[in-house]
Length: 216
Image (cartoon, rainbow, N blue to C red; front, side, top):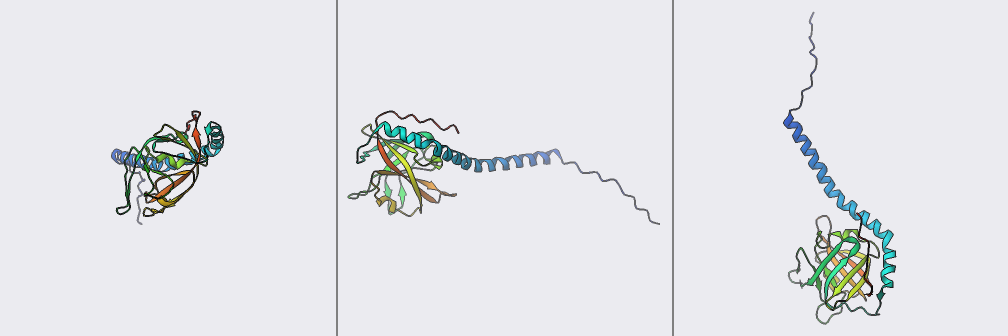
């Protein structure tokens, strides 16, 4: 008769170094997921907030603004979207059709004049980064845009919609929307597209605008 002796199984304890490595790996994974997810969640919350508050804000600013029939933008020097926390200087930009390059940096928005002899919607563009237009992801219908020109006037606009463009599509620079401006920034997971946001003219600000900042 053969007797088989069974020894009691004892689980192997993980080494301290292995445990620490696992904890660090899981922590980094969670941190990475949070970093990728939070900007989208934050932008969605901002859009929801705007949907609730922007109509009332637009009504208020319209009452405190004169409204000439024709918009005269002049030379813009600064722009802001108060609810989104965007406030940035505007400089003159140049687009090279041959090289398909734009004047750009990490701390300005840029204004582009229409080609000589053409009438086109004024375009202001900038990087999709936090110091410039990164918070445009939270824009909502009737979002208020303020543009200050070199004469010291503050022109008010409201967001009405946008479109996605291929980076080689320069047609937007020849489009003419009466009494409007267009903001352009990058979009897409790899910043492979351009997002063109149209803002319609509201008037010239006579009464200082106070828009509660986002609590998000």
